[in-house]
Length: 187
Image (tube, rainbow, N blue to C red):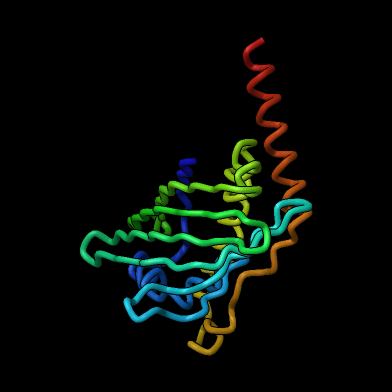
């Protein structure tokens, strides 16, 4: 499943780029993510917990992050396994940070592959709607981190806990409304 998102951060492009280069700090702004350390090869070990309505999956795995300062681009290649539910996930993501009036725009393109029980949610379009809502939370956290006056204040900023059932229901509602709009638009 391909996910494409763009969002604007109301901060200087150089500050946003520096934030994206600080993987531990950035991970704190990803709802449901926990960085566990690095491997001998430089990959980041971590886990991501996703609450999808009645289902909860915790994907444990590794990600390799590569960045290019000159073009302000980066790639993330990750994979993980939910040992309890038997689901597997893989992501190939690229991001680009460009200056815009009033801040920086971040363009993200991700190819997400899910198998097992978690794959059922990807077929309904809920994963895309949930990703939009999680990105909103991420941007809010990132802006708070960048606006902090001291490094200690910035380090204390972290993503709010994701309320699985409310996120699921609001995402489901947005998906249903989207389907209805497309259906009624064709009539």
